[in-house]
Length: 252
Image (cartoon, rainbow, N blue to C red):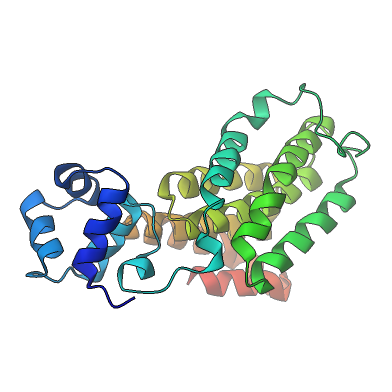
């Protein structure tokens, strides 16, 4: 925890077998500037530090001396690879044999899936080991959400439920500094939200997409997206529930 930021960057870079040129290119800086940061003669601005952390697949706090939490313990990386594989392939593997314990689940029982998703969200918000705990749950939730979409011909209820599952996945991969997966999941949420036809789900998914764009460094595009969504929501506000007003405020 007492190691200077530059030395921490160099340590993580070497651990990932990256040379200076590769890391600098991925972080959008020059190799010379990165060398100066690692040597301690330059202090990177926060946006630069965030890009370096993303390129190293670390949380930014890990580069300023924060002790690793249980969330970052060893088994996480293989499980993240498993989750990534499910995200990319589950839609093409719906005919595969169900995993043990899943074969009795009714893919049209959206209420049961909603209960499991709510519990997973509670774990994410309250558990001190949330990353590891939710990582074990998410692949099964994603597969079952996609099965539900297929079994119900992408009903509005199934689309809304799938949005909740993918939103949880988005929170987790953002925590893991995976910008690519964060944006992919946000886009998937937006498409499902449009299919649901639910203004609140659409607005919330737009907020999630905006946050993902900011995370990826696309602040101006995120602002444009948010303002467009606000214009669509405002005519609905006089008769809207408080929850839609809350999302409207979040977009502002």
